[in-house]
Image 1 (tube, helix red, strand yellow):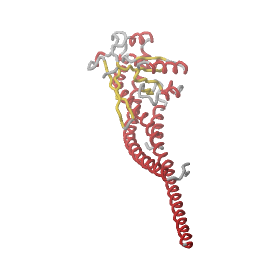
Image 2 (image 1 turned 90 degrees about the vertical axis):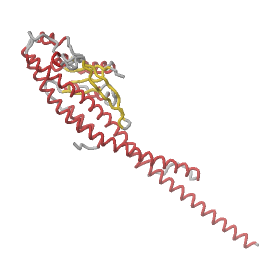
Image 3 (image 1 turned 180 degrees about the horizontal axis):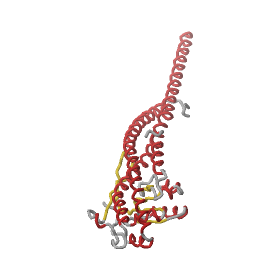
Length: 213
Length: 105
């Protein structure tokens, strides 16, 4: 640990004491923040992992089915079939504050809400039933995908914030606070020492004066 | 206030054509340069979520990382029709390591 580069005066001592008090309080607060963030993070990341596994599996299924469908149909027809979608998906994003981290809250806005039967933008005459299956599967996955997007983003942002907070906590705990404590001790010693030497000097002067009288 | 963000899917055409039927915007992209440009362009536009296939994402990790600490847009990896490369899972594990210090899951 290093002593701070300050003059050992009484004024400096009060200043450092104030700084130490602030640093200790800040450390406590940040530590609390870190703990709470960590708790939330672990909760979320578990969910995140489960959800991703699920979504990946289902999505792969749906895409495989789509691949089969496109094998049955000619590519031109395929493209034509999905060219003008009936459904239009947008997403509304709000911010939520979790321990000073802003995480998104997403909600899908579907144009054809509650009308699942009519999501197919093509006539049934020229398309295969595999395509219908693939698209309806995909449609069902979308809401899960959104949930995944929301939670994964939140986890990313929280991971960043936790790392930052941890650095701050450690800097305070292992650097700032010990340095301040040591410097305060050093100044106290210095001040005590000079006080003692003043007393000794006074006693000496008194002796000399008494010897003269 | 409801503010509408759009949803985009970026990937090779065979994997993402299916999404087009659902009314999300589809960008078919094949090589690295194109992918980078597409992602950067649509990130600046009014997109809230960008789904990108892992195959493409593995080519442009830097570009993906750039959006990690922004709330909008969320860049999310999805498997393509050739299956998953586990990059999405890796990213979750990396997040855990970053936050906790070691992988506890």
